[in-house]
Image (tube, rainbow, N blue to C red):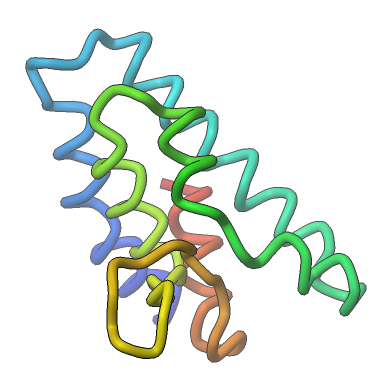
Length: 117
């Protein structure tokens, strides 16, 4: 049930990416490829706490470098997959990182759902 609910929640963000007329199909698929690599790397290292700590944080500047055209789509999909923005400073400035699994049990189903959908 949790996987189904997570998949239903992910579909609008995926649809927005694929239906964006300003993106070529190759650009949309490139974003999905980046997301897939990030999630697979994360899931492969779930049982290794040191590697998980490294891969569960995604620097937004790296995402924007890898996905230069309309990166907000990739950010939205990653947030549906259990990533949350972390502010750069305690004063609540703009986010510098996306971090996965602040609650790992709750984040696993969305990550799997995004990969499946």
